[in-house]
Length: 147
Image (cartoon, rainbow, N blue to C red; front, side, top):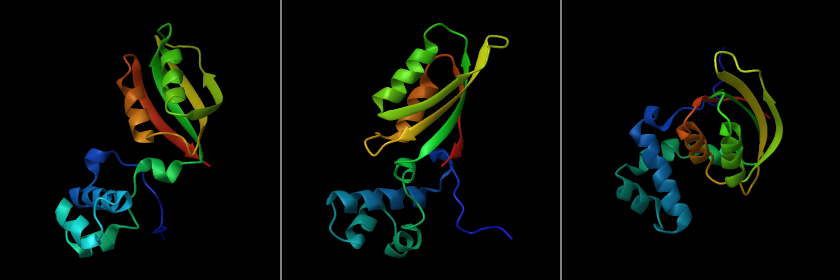
């Protein structure tokens, strides 16, 4: 029997639009831009019942990970300075790097694992991952473990 309270990491493009609208409505309420659930739901184009149905089950990626230790794997080209660029992105987003392990490159590609601590000050984690993925020579970024 499968647990019903499990978590999944899903890219935004795979999330149904109603769930994305619930996140927007929650943000409007948190920031005070809207005072009531009715106003926020109308603003984003969903019903109040949809908001209440999903509000406790959807949240931005970074909210769930703040303060956690996460291990990421990367496949990167064996290019001088690329690892330094990736580490700079992590630092710029306020991530605390705990361990780094890089394999010897095979066919010009290195496997890298990083264990990092997401601090309360860590900025938008999904934007951080997107920034890393946009680096020329970064082939793959995956979260493999979380404590």
